[in-house]
Image (cartoon, rainbow, N blue to C red; front, side, top):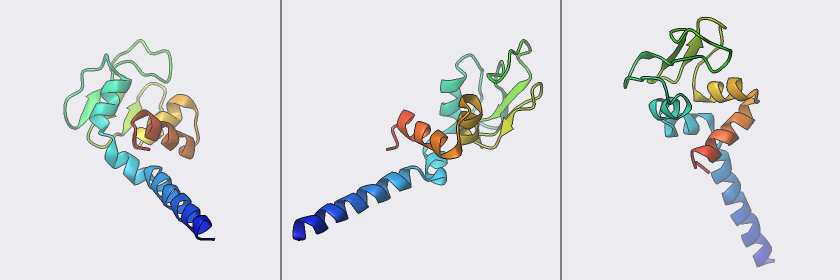
Length: 115
């Protein structure tokens, strides 16, 4: 009986750790928007804070490098050509990959080794 209790306690602790890692605020606070967008948009010249030109829009066939903007302080992004926009890195992954919220958080947690 005691071993079952230990297994349940360990399982419950692992569930808490996993659910904490998939908490949106935890993920957004753990991933620097600057680092994220430098990884996702390697050709873009990004400054440390404020709105930056993010280069060509990854959401459509863009030929005008000034249409896609990212805010490396907040994680917001917006394309002024195709109108795709979002509030943070989770929204970016959702829009780029056509994922649901939980799926995007799982991808980010795995890719940025937060789990």
